Length: 132
Ligand SMILES: *[C@@H]1O[C@H](CO)[C@@H](O)[C@H](O)[C@H]1NC(C)=O
Image: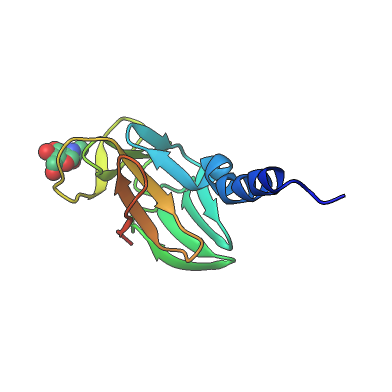
């Protein structure tokens, strides 16, 4: 018996949609944070707020980028705010690092892509703008 077309396209839809549904670990919405030890993951890449206070991008075991804030504080966390600033604060909320894009206040999403590029998008994910 042939699979009804509508049924097949439903599965095709699920297949397309599933990266979005399971994406919880490769994105942060504005207002979100990555706490010390937390990371975004996509493919072989990991963007981690390391426990040593550095924010780093790893490709497998190789570190490709870091914020240069290692050992500057304890319990550091990354904040992605409603101006799309990427900011590292220490456990006492002292600002240690910022990548700001001078954008308007809004709803943003920060996404680690499978290519290892970090991008942000405004509102619904239509157009990604790469940051790192
Ligand atoms: C975030 O960016 C906005 C716009 O550029 C700026 O006004 C605001 O002070 C920034 N916040 C931090 C914590 O740097």
